[in-house]
Image (tube, rainbow, N blue to C red; front, side):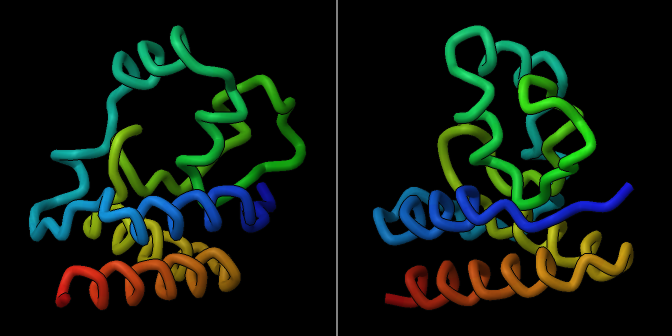
Length: 117
């Protein structure tokens, strides 16, 4: 599997952070990462394109209308989570997706700067 950076998701996350729609949480991403039921509920009310905005990675070998195309979630469909960005950054680094790792790190820095104000 070869993933690429989802620039739409990066821009969307940055916009949310700038609007203050983030959680500077210290918990574990597993506590906030939407489960399958939450994902399906979101998709019942939103387009797949909107779902994709919540994921920093794209698998271009998968069809656009499938959840399998999207990887490295960072939020709960309402807010960006600090621990989601950390998890995305760490997983991307472990799997060798440097571009996704760097984007998650930049978003994390923006979030932390905004939270410090």
